[in-house]
Structures are given as C-alpha cells and as structure tokens.
Length: 244
Length: 244
DNA sequence: TTATGTGAACTGCTTCACAGCA
DNA sequence: TGCTGTGAAGCAGTTCACATAA
Image 1 (tube, each protein chain N blue to C red):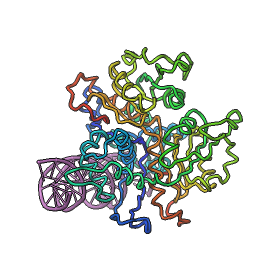
Image 2 (image 1 turned 90 degrees about the horizontal axis):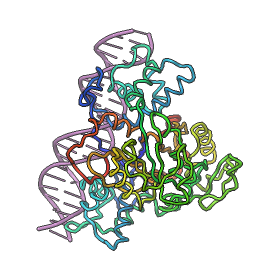
Image 3 (image 1 turned 60 degrees about the vertical axis):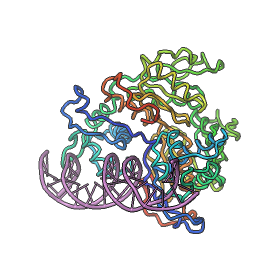
Image 4 (image 1 turned 60 degrees about the horizontal axis):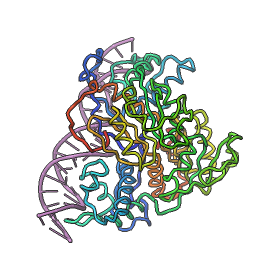
C-alpha cells in the first residue's frame, strides 16, 4: 500500500455542492477508495466476458474480500443494486468510473525517467481511467530528448509551469532528488503528487501527496516471514482469497 | 500501498517461540509494520549525520506522523527509550532491523524483466535490508541472457525450484501472466509473493501475498482531486506534514 | 426465494492525557 | 524537568445479521 496511509479528508458529495447528484452525503473511507479500482477492473473483465449482472458475493470472491464489504462499499455511494438479483455490471462500472473521476481528463507529468519512470510512462494504468501522460522530465542529458510513452523526455527546467495543465505530478526520481522535485512541482501548480521515492515529502497544506514505496512492501514481507512458525506444511485454512 | 490491505495474522513474538527474547507478546498491527521501514530510513539518516539520540517528537516530524504513534509503535516491541532523553538511534535502528528480519538473508527472485522488473532488480531496496536478488526471469528471448541487477536473466522454465533457495517471489509481469507465474512460484516453493500485477492472485493458504498496484494509487489521487472543493487558494491549515 | 442495504456490534488503529522514570 | 510508555477514550473500518424489496 501502499503505503503511507493518507489521513485524507475525503470530502463528502454534499460538501462538494453542485456535483452531488442525489447521492447521500457520506464520507468515503480511504479503504473503500482503494478498493474501487479493483472492483472496476473485475467489472470490466466480466463485461468483456459477456456477463451483465453480478452479485456482491461473486464480486467479493473475485476481489478477495468479503461480500458485506462489497455491499457496504457501494452503498456509500447510493443504492446501485437490485434485491434478489445483484448489480448491473455496466451501470455499476459507470458509477465507479464517475466516483473515481475516471470520466474526466487527468493530465499527468512524470519526473524521473529511470526504469521506474519508464515503466509508469508506458503502463496501461497511466493511459486509461482518464489519465494521460502529458509530459515526462529528467535531468540526465543522455535521456532528455528520447521518446518515452508517447512523449519526448524534456529537461526538468522545462517543467516550470507545465502543471498548469497537469494537476498531477509523479515523482520517480532517486530519493535524494525527491524533495526538490516536489518543490518544483508545487511551484508549477501541482495539486497532487504521487511519490515513488523513499522520502517523506514536505509540501504546502492543500497539495495532496500519496506515497508508494516499492521496497516497504518487500520489508513487510520479510517481517511476516521472519515470524512465521517455521515454514509450516500447515493445513489449508483457506485457499483462494488471494491476499494475506 | 501498497494497497490491498493484508488482513494478515501477524503472529506475536511469544507465539513464535525460541526467537522471542524477553520481548512482550503482542500482535503487531500491520499499520505499524509498514511504518518501521520509514523509521529505519530516518534513523539511518540521523546516524549518518552524527546524531545519536532522538525523541519521539523529532522522529514523528520527520516521518510525517504524530509522536504518540511513534512511541506506541516502538512500545509494541519493548521499552527502547530513556525517559527524559529519547531513543538511542543506533540501538533503536538495530531493534527495528531485527524486527523486520533485515538482519537475515532474504534471497528474492523477480519474474518479469520489463521496465518495472528492471527497476526493482536495480533498486537499492532490493539489495539492502537483507534482500538479495538471487535470480531474475522472463520468457522473452530478447531479454533472456541479458545482465540485470547483478544477475543474468534466465528463462522462466528455469525457475522450477529456484525458490528452494529464495522464499520470496516478485511478480512484475503483465496482468495476464500473473496468475500462472504465481502458480509456478508456489510450485517452486515460494513462501511469499510480492505482486505488482493488477490482478488478485489465488494461492494456497500458507503463501503470503502482498499486492502493490502502481495505478491504484493514481486512481486514488484522481478520486480525491475530483471531489476537492475546486482548487482552493485555501488558508494553510498545516504546512509540513507531508502526507495528506 | 434471493440478494441488497444497513443498524448495530465488533475489531483494530490512533490519539489523548498523564503516571512514571531518568 | 522532560520525555517515554501506556491506560483509556475515540475514531475508522469490518462484519454480522436481518429487515426490506424485487
């Protein structure tokens, strides 16, 4: 997770004003937010397979969570299901898409074109759900000018106010450069920063920061393995829920 | 986050038996586990800067969390601090290192040598804290045989039981290949899988799975931005806590 | 009959506030 | 006096269990 849990405010629809279209005002738990993309992916798979209706149980199984959680998650946004039947996959997918803002255009700039930056710039996830890589930056002369993910790598100096048209900045630089890149992104008007560098960033209040640290998850793995009761050929308690 | 929160059991030290050396038996919350690497990083910085003692407040500020949380986190492992003074940075770092299992050797195999796989294989995080990339695999003939992160890329077919000496498998393949790679890793004896592919994996009970989905975090960003009260030039409530 | 939507209970994590110790 | 360690309170997220509706 990700990782560093954001204590984000997560404003309700009612607080949002005009955008709230008959949906009850609720605070959406962050835990729910990060499950929405998973449901969305599964619904897309189902639709592609010609399945038009799905129950909370079916969805829960595929998402590796429990059915009550699925129902609770959706109920936070309104009543999308039909009792006795389940959810209309297409309708549900559209609701989630809207909730995630995936029906809007989200230009993204990525700073740092090492392997990670290139992986991100080329990934499906950064070219769908409304996202669009509008610019990629680096400082290495050997990299500047190259074509990556549909754009040409520009020098970081060019970033000055590129974020005026790209509210989301992604930091994929080494840790040592992360804070100064964050400062540049903020100065250029970034509203949110997705930080892949292992550093805690300091940014002004209104800028949203989310951190993803690839090696923290690995360290969490070693933590759990280190205190495992010695590689048990232990009876299958459950098989199939994926996570855990 | 990382992301998909693992409802992991997180066994206590006492349950662990022999390894528990006078430390109180407590269940360590997952939330604490993922903070330990952050503390560890900060302590390393402090030590490098010649600072030998640190208070929970100082540490909290640098980690972007609150001081009570820092104290609670450490107290779960024992009483490491000195009242009136703070924590001995080196001692604390050693305790965290031990808790995370970073004082052991953790061979890791990585499957999928696209940009992400290469980023991981070359990253510091996979070559420190006890981790060691013992093998990297792919199926693309154009990639097999190349040198990456200190080893040579082998064909996936060679993986058969490489995990006998590498309990941790990392999946950095496209989503479509993730489940079959997971099956191979499990068959080869993997005890834990760190999955970067956007797919919920199905694995037998005792295998620990943690998922990191790079684009879910991006989608969470758009969720929060989408319901922001319209780019407020809004009074700094707080500046400096980084995450939010 | 079936499966949603939800009050209520529960579990887990965070934060407060202060006793206890250096 | 200063800062840790921790009961107790508070808050967030999950799960139960069932009323409700198709």
